[in-house]
Amino acid sequence: MGASSEAEQHPSPAAPSAAGGEHAQRRRKHWGWGYEDEQPTSAQLAALARSLEARLQVPFQEPRAPAALEQLRLPAVRLSAPRALAELCTSSHYERARHAHGSSYADVVEGFYGRFAAAPDLVAYPRSEDQVQALLAWCAEERIAAIPYGGGTSVVGGVRPQLPAGYAGALCIDLSRLSGLYELDTVSAAARLGAGSSGPQLEAALGRSGFTLRHYPQSFALSTLGGWIATRAAGHFATGQTHIEDQLEALRMATPAGMVATTRLPASGAGIDPLRLMAGSEGALGVITEAWVRVRRRPRTIVRATVSFERFELGAHCIAALLQEDLQPANCRLLDEHEAALALAEGERRALLLLAFESPAGAQVARGALAAAMDRALAICAQHGGALRGEARFQERSQPSADAGAGAREAGEAGWREAFLGAPYLRDAMVACGVFTETFETAVTWERLAALDNEVRGAALRVLEGRGVRERDLRLSARLTHAYRDGAAPYYTVIAPVARGEEHTLWQELKSAISEAILAAGGTITHHHAVGRDHMPWYGRERPEPFAAAIAGAKSALDPRWVMNPGVLLKVPPLS
Ligand SMILES: Cc1cc2nc3c(=O)[nH]c(=O)nc-3n(C[C@H](O)[C@H](O)[C@H](O)COP(=O)(O)OP(=O)(O)OC[C@H]3O[C@@H](n4cnc5c(N)ncnc54)[C@H](O)[C@@H]3O)c2cc1C
Image (cartoon, rainbow, N blue to C red):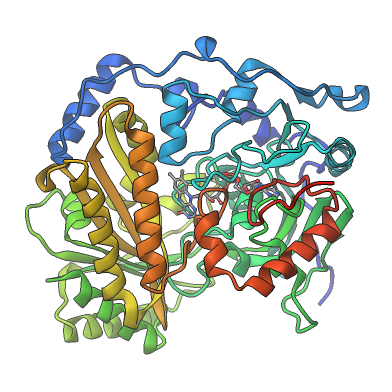
């Protein structure tokens, strides 16, 4: 092959990208989801609350207003940046507040009521890799906790500056200015992107050349490439290449011990894979500054179908059969009867399987091959008692698009998808109305799925009923988000009334009971939400002890003073 790289007019890593600038003009809310200009008025919130209450059939309380930014009390600032780094750092009240919490229900509650037990002392906005390295050198020197921050959508306490003893303070390193498409290699179909690029930024940039990363976590609007890699996020593909590391070709990570940079390779059998060490490192080894990821032409043809099953478990058996016959639908999500009723707003109580096959390469679509795959899948569904709703529908796309949301919208059933991406906004409204809402996820082999499902539902109900919540007032629903030949990733949503002031305790009780149930039933503490600080007690039991020691060794080599995101992935040993 000839020239390997098509250098397009992309911003250099050292300069803030235009796309980053656009986001910089809109301020994120200091609590919860989205931007300040998206906050509903009190009348809009009241109307939303009424319609959600009617739809969910869960009692809502009178909406309250969130604690105002200017009334928040933050802990005193303990750090002052050296002169050379001062222009990168801020201790502004707003910046410290907005980087203090991640995005779990517990985080949203804390932000809503204005509880800021911890906040970063300073927030840094590096614009180059050198600046990241200089910040890390300062942190190592002064034993300051360095907390990489992508979009702050962690739901496991990954960005919370809650420090063990021995640290001088916390520096939040916001990567949003290390963003943009730096290079696009159309020969090898790969792109070099800044780690701070958000989902919409990177899809818009790739879309201009007809490419896509096709990674759509539900947090797509705010989360970043670096965050996805650091947490091994799972996205659009429900089967096959489910996790971001499946698209990862190379990356660069700044560590206190220096830069770690891997070579671009399609595959390698050379020893332990350095990419696999860094993907999933959750900021505990270093700061991912950029990555090469495999991209693809946007699919031209997609065929979709919806199949209903009398029971969730019948749909699950069907998915196992589909995958074991080597079918690989892009979408293969199974909603239990509760989720299905909400998605369809119908009274009928049946589980729903959302199926889609898409052309892998785009250009000359083998429409016949997609039709054959769907026909075979539907035949297997019928053998498992599935009933096709309507008919399989083809969708053709003609033009490349820079519309960042287009891919996300086409990724599944349109209505369900819109609801999927809009859900985080509704969560803020529910917090304002005294309604608990949180999700719990895992993965387990097929033969254990039914028992795990039973255990998790039982554990959640025991906690809620123990707190006097009547069964008719709560919603406990499940879906399978991702599936494999040997198992699947169940994902539970709990919605229930909660007394004001009791939110955090209820969250802790549910997190603990459900996590115990998952481990007891042979599941993993996380399929894609990561470990962070909140899953540490269970991760510590899931992970083999000698492996923990090996990771600690890697950390000591890359981060000898243990300043990188302390408390995440590894317990901090006594500091000398
Ligand atoms: C409503 C909602 C829906 C979600 N849906 C999904 C989903 O569908 N799939 C899924 O996988 N997850 C999902 N998540 C979880 C979350 O979005 C993912 O974990 C995501 O990958 C985090 O990306 P981020 O950029 O927001 O990272 P952050 O939240 O900022 O950080 C997450 C962790 O990664 C570290 N980190 C961030 N950037 C870097 C970097 N450049 N270098 C080193 N470390 C870094 C942080 O220190 C932290 O430990 C969801 C969260 C919410 C709130």
